[in-house]
Image (spheres, rainbow, N blue to C red):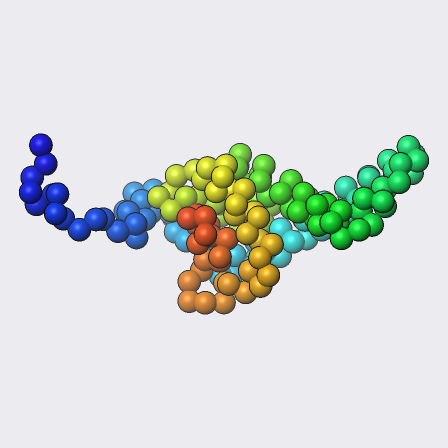
Length: 161
């Protein structure tokens, strides 16, 4: 049975839980320099993947005489291709390893706000949020988190050694 004091107590803040989780796990939020380095490396890796898959699709289209440009030559096809490649890059890497190539280089990884492994839904929505216009500029504020972190309750951290 709960005491009268616990029934009427103020709810615990999510922020307090976050602080406790980081203290217990030794996680430190990544600073802006690490986040910017992640962004540069991941952008280069994304464009390399776009080039490689685009080249492969073009060659296969030529060899099979399938008119690939009928699909990729219109705005909807281009957006499907661009979004698909971005999801193909981020979702498997961040869901299974917690890291993209940029995070691997900087020693950071994605965690939920309580320090646990993010769910597939969090990673998927986090990846989709990168398409919001001006989202990269969301890091210019006081915090080291972008909109794709805030909207999905995730954080990029590194371990305190």
